[in-house]
Image (cartoon, rainbow, N blue to C red; front, top):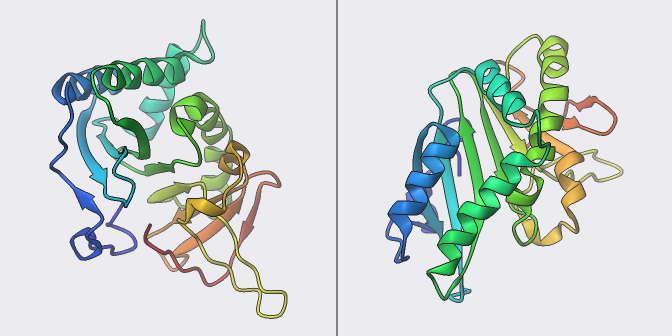
Length: 219
């Protein structure tokens, strides 16, 4: 869970652990570091479901966002699903040497100028939709920056909007149980800024911005 923009203190949440008791974890980490060409940190999201391990993976990229874009484009020239397949294979290798079910709960890609935070919707949804998510980000990023005239510090994918017909209050929610399908990745995003904008909801489908008071709830 990102903490720099919304001031989360994960130690108070008590929902994460750095002590992952998994076979093949070091190999898994090295595979991810080779794939992302970045430093990787891995935590576990603690839940009541002891039969499943939910991973929180943080990618610290040494590149600017534009450089990551170029790397993504080059890697998908011959196969538009290349990155997702690579992630699925890396996960499958870890799964093969463990009896407990394993999935990525949250994947954050931190570059020099912005951080992309992707949360799970369903089983293996992040890996399965990774290429599609990146493609939509690439198609939307320049428009977002030119429209707001500021680079977002964080982009949260996905978020839900909860609107009261009278009050028109919107909230960014991290409760994934209310999400129905992977299509939610391409509905609403949360854009976090250091300026007076603070946080804006981006309507992906309509390429529109929702300027309302926004609250971000921890998962």
